Image 1: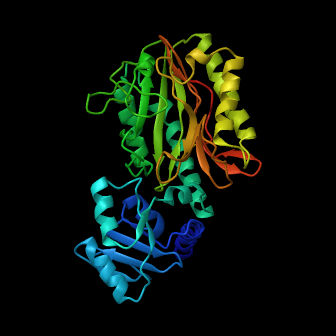
Image 2: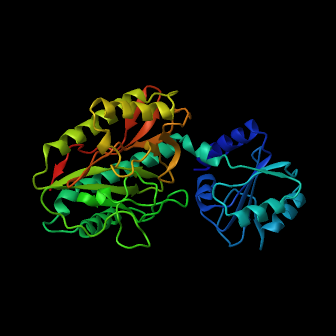
Amino acid sequence: MINELKLRRNKLCEKMHEQNIDACLISTKINLYYLTGKIFDGYLYIAQDGEVRVFLKRLTSFENENIFVIRKPEQIIEFIIQDGLELPKRIMLEDDYLTASEWLRLSKVFPEAEPVSSIIRQVRSIKTDYEVKQLMESAKKHSMLYSKIKEIYKPNMTDLELSAEIEKQARLLGHLGVFRIFGSSMEIFMGSVLAGDNAHNLSPYDFALGGEGMHPSIPVGLNGTRLKDGITVMVDMSGNFTGYITDITRVFSIGEIPQKAYDLHQINIEILNELAYFGKEGVTCGELYEKAISIVESYNVFEYYMGNVQQTKFVGHGVGLEINEPPVLSKKNKMLIKEGMTIALEPKFVLPGIGAVGNENTYVVCKNGLKNITIFDENIISL
């Protein structure tokens, strides 16, 4: 693991060198974990040349690191000077995670340095071989979880009762219980189960599909719908079994559902296959988005695509330590797809009176296309 952490830090230092950043100060738990393999209360200081200092507010066991115990962040600069390090002229702070007050306080710790924006999410978007293996392990257990859904379903269940049973099985398989999401516009428990017309209900959160939720304090996901004949149940539960999160959506049917649902679901599978072939290194996110739209429009089914009340404007997103890492596969995003990225594709459809259809898979970007690591039956499964 020591070599893995060095590799990650070197990636960050290379990006810092490209942008003439002298040092970075990391304080948020997900980035601390990425760069140290631990979550702790304190700060990680990395100079452009790779020199590392750890400043702890609460004692934590560390090996092979230069450790300093502090009471407040203002002491950081004192220890840096005492340790003979050159003070930075430009320092990276995590502006995409920090509150305004945290940003201001930390920027004043280095009054002579120019604070610059965080680049670490860009660095994290390209996974190391170790990270890909962690995602593949999560994907394996995630698929095992979905294989249990048919046997735990019982007639006359509600979406809540089904979700609770899925969550139980997830924990027994080793799910860590935390669904890490970046940003303030998204929150949910372990994932989403959308039954019938609840798939039409709008949510203020930036998910592909919303759902009413069980309470106004968390207006997303299941809402207590009873699972009855003629509707679909879309299961989109998280797969955090290793700290790295995979994304799988599969659709289940209750009783007989109309042929239209199967037709739209088959279009979803076609889109996934086309994007997997088309998504070679060097293609832009916007091109992948437009490719999906062109297939939808060729079948004249745009009215059902990604919700038919308020349609979502992306077809996929990066995954990793958080469920929504870069890149976002949206129309205007000119970011290039690169080998080592891990992304989830989710071109979904919603039918009035029936519910949502469409799969979501997690892929590793390779030079010649996208490799699906979430292997599970992609047909609509009858319960």
